[in-house]
Image (cartoon, rainbow, N blue to C red; front, side, top):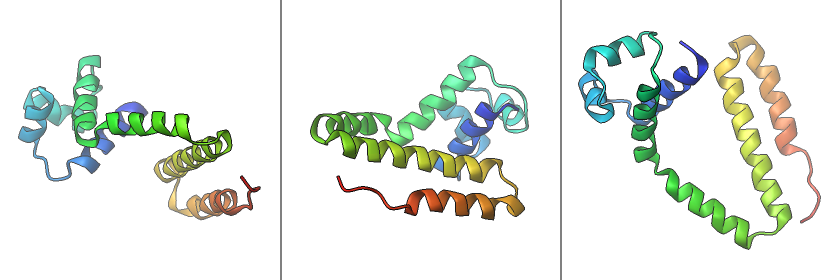
Amino acid sequence: MNKLQQRIILQYKELYPQDTLKEISLKTNIQITRVFRLFNGSEMKLKEYESFETAIDEKINNNDFYHKAKECSLILSPQKLKDIYALMNQSIKLKTLQITSTPTSINFQLQEYFNLVLKPRGKN
């Protein structure tokens, strides 16, 4: 199973933790036996990726995020936008560290991350 597929399945499980295979099948229009195989390591086809992404998008409603980002780009100063961008990158890095790290190495990596987050910034 590749990393993209792992991310999609993990994100789906986080958004729909109680879903049974039957419910997943109904939401994604993928046969129940195929859903079982996907959750057990079979490689996804493009159409299956799209089905899971659609189910995920319906739950988190990405349109709200994009509209808010557009509003920010029109209203906020360039420095504030840069700060938001940096915070988003830091959040992505933290999530990546959580997914790819072993328990023994994560303490060092988290310390490095918090040093980046807590370092003093200039005035806006």
